[in-house]
Image (cartoon, rainbow over all chains, first blue to last red; front, side, top):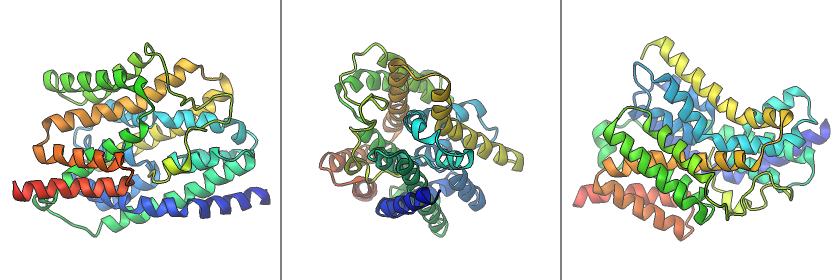
Length: 250
Length: 99
């Protein structure tokens, strides 16, 4: 038990430099959320409960009455689908832990602490880094979010300084980092084509999911050249070095 | 947005993220994931971002497209994502101010 506590502390310190990088992204989310019309309390509550930058940004587009409930649930799910693989790769380490620790680790799984945890061989150490590192990232995400609440801009000013571009550029950066080789080309082209066509011809909120699903299905028919197999028999995540993931935000 | 909708909105998001974070762990305890499921999920993560970005680029102005180009260039040059985001947004502001 105290062994895990030590690893949690170690994970917290290990992820502190990455957590500092998360701050400005929390700030950017906060500003974007205010632009979308969310109240301060709702913004902070979302960051605390959801703790996943990309899906929080994506949800802003769906923030209006009446709420498109099903697209909301499915978009958030799809944006975080990679977490399913991360959780699965941690399963051997997590099942040795009591339920409370397991749930805490699951709540805190995100890109950066997962990548660092995967570099460890020892299961207890993996769990410790997920929890400790996740705590560091979580705290930074809250600090960034709250700090952003002080920046009040009008829609007009935000447009003039290009702040409306934060969201698409953030997605673009995440996309760049997801690139795993040319086997991604066809699925991504299909996803773009379907999303754009759907938005132009049909409109509504389903275009994101239509594109995402089309890309996912096409990928099943494309030979996978990439080495990126999260659950390979060798040490999982060998392709994901902390250098590559060091700037990953929550 | 009513109070009830707000609570519902946050609840749906929370449950959806928990189902991805916890889903893999639970799934593995029942049945191991095959390579096709893994492939699908990995492609889904990338494709959803494409499906968010592509329509935004199409409907956006030239300033946003220029910002996206600068942002991608910064990533290609391995300047880190904070530099990429900042220079990208600055480009959008500059293009709107001067062009």
